[in-house]
Image (tube, rainbow, N blue to C red; front, side, top):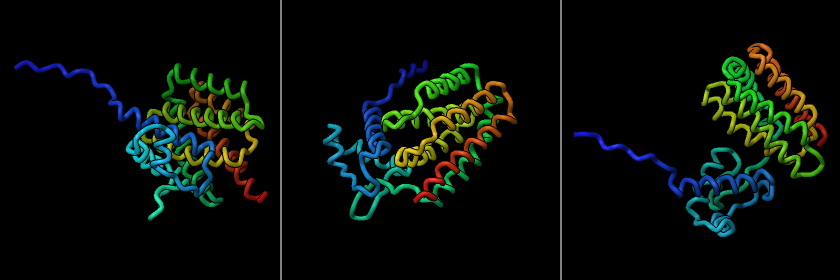
Amino acid sequence: MASVPVPRLTPPPRTMLRDTVYESIKQMLMDHDLAPGARLSIDGIARQLQVSPTPVREAMTKLESDGLVAKRPHAGYVVASLLDEASLANLYEMRVLLEPPAAGLAAMRATDEQIAEMRALVETMTAHPAGENYEQYRDFAVRDAQLHRLIAEASGNPLIADALSRLHAHTHSYRLYFKVGIAQETTQEHQQIVEAIAAHNSEAAPEAMFHHLSASNERLQAVYAQE
C-alpha cells in the first residue's frame, strides 16, 4: 500500500496565543510594571489581554520555571522576589561555568552569518547606548541578552543555549530594576568577545567572556555595597 503524504504541520492557534500571552506578561515583569511580591490575577490578566484564562495559566507555568513568578499556597501566583546578594553570586558562578566554554565553542563553530549578526548587534548597542531614559535602558538590556543568546547558539550546543536563556531572565530583571550604569563598559567588553569569536580564537574568546562576566558581577555587587 502506498504511503499517504503527511501534510506540512503548522503551529495551532492555541500555541501561538500561549506564546504571545507569555511574552506579554514577561514584558510586564521585566519592565517592573508589577512590583516584586505583587499578586497576579489570572482572570484580571486574561481580561486585560482579552484572552481566556487558559493561555494565561500556561504562561504562568512557564514563567514560574523561568523564576519570574512564584506560586504561593492560597494566593496563586505572585511576582518573584529580586535576587539577593548571595543568589546573584550563585547566578554568576553558574554563568562562568557555561558562558566562557560556550564562547570558545562559538569561536570554533560560528558561521559567517552568525558572526555578522553578532557584530551588527554590538554596533546597534554602540549607536544606541543606554541613557537615563528607562525605555532606552530596557532596550539595551534586551540587546545584551540577545547577544549572549547568539553566542550560546553559535556554540552549537542547544542545551547550553536553553540553560542560559533561563538564567538571563533573572539577570536582566535585576539589571532593569536597579538601572546600573554599565552601557559603555559592557559594550566594549562585548566587542572584545565578538572579535575573538570572529578571529576563531578559541583561547581569547573564553578569556574575554570570563573578563566580561567578572566585571559585570562586580558592577552589580557594588549596588549592595551602596545600600
